[in-house]
Image (cartoon, rainbow, N blue to C red; front, side, top):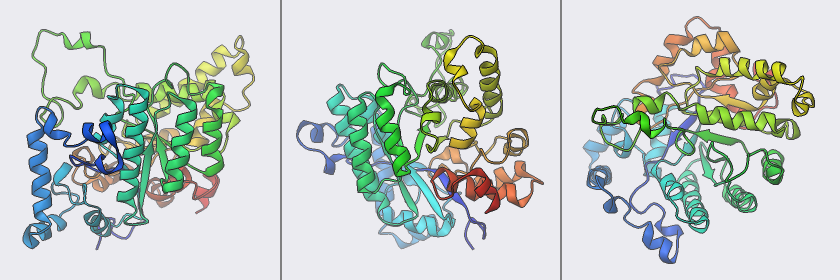
Length: 392
């Protein structure tokens, strides 16, 4: 029996745990040197390389391998997670988990892009990361590679998504922040959005790129800074957690206000690992703002659909396992939310299905099936409309 326990489940958020030289085979010259042995060049990297070495050694240790494979979702996470960076193990992990499809995002490879010192370096790192992710996911058709492109340069962003799509990527991710010095709704980006729509490529906004953190002054509170979620110093802390959804709200508001979702009604996308309890009120506030400002705003007057209807048609959201997804569904409808494991990140918990089931409670089977299966199918262009999802 698999972890899915007979239910058809699509997993909207999982990750690779990139090794020291994840990008190296796909780079040349100075960039190849820059991204070789990346953890050895940073403070605290020894802890990471030790975990990677243990995971590699496990592959040749039948007893350790069997122990890890016997408790995939509840066992080790991060680089020690089964299939975190070994694609053959990931196929085995999916066999045990029983998920029908799994979106696979990078983790630390994104730092090569966000910390790039030039546009040339950023797009070179994106190209290498996309090739690495696609190669990993080529091991099994259930594994869907999520490509990444910076949006700073409209022409280069379009070139990168074309390249990644041709190589086999099934979705594209970018920062939930302004597109360089422009809104993502600027007309310069219309060819990019049209390409996604025409080729049925969903866009993804994810924690990390573009995530808004509180102003640094809030950390000047007279106390030593606490460890982050994982006991280290570079990830999420409590004040950061409380602002995760700010950037996606701004980005989606731009797509609505600038007319992107009406010019390209076939666009679909997801907001992943930013929580979802904020979504019902966000939709209400979009419509409230629309009604309040359309008397004087010619762009709102030109809208043919309410903002909330545009989001409902185009975007899906993943709650955290400990959020009350049942309440969200009762409040905003069953078509907006979808399951994710975040495997092998520890934030996904050791039993996400049980945690989601606790809040789904007495919702009918149709609503649960939308959460676990068909809302993902809609986002990934496997079905055409919310009505078709409900009729599945």
